[in-house]
Length: 104
Picture 1 (tube, rainbow, N blue to C red):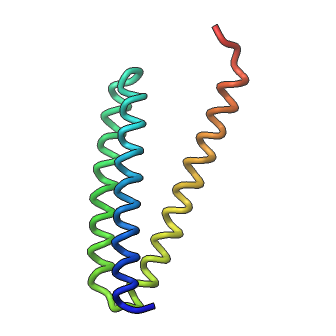
Picture 2 (spheres, one colour):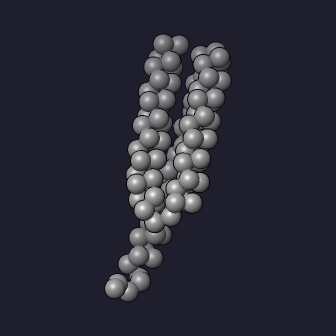
């Protein structure tokens, strides 16, 4: 993989991660702000920290050689996949709980 390809992959990763963070923040904030202002504030703080962490990680990646950038991007990708799986499990669990409770 050439240095240009790695940089392009890093840019794509950055755009995707930021879009994911933005979409997640908007969806969660809209839903939760109605029900729990304290939780909404805590999640806002979490999303802010996650965004700063992403920026720091990508700056570190940019400083590496092409081979280092490739390794770091792959490791970061695995980390994001684990995070996504955790969220998906929580969503599935929440759906099951919602269906098992009587309505009304």
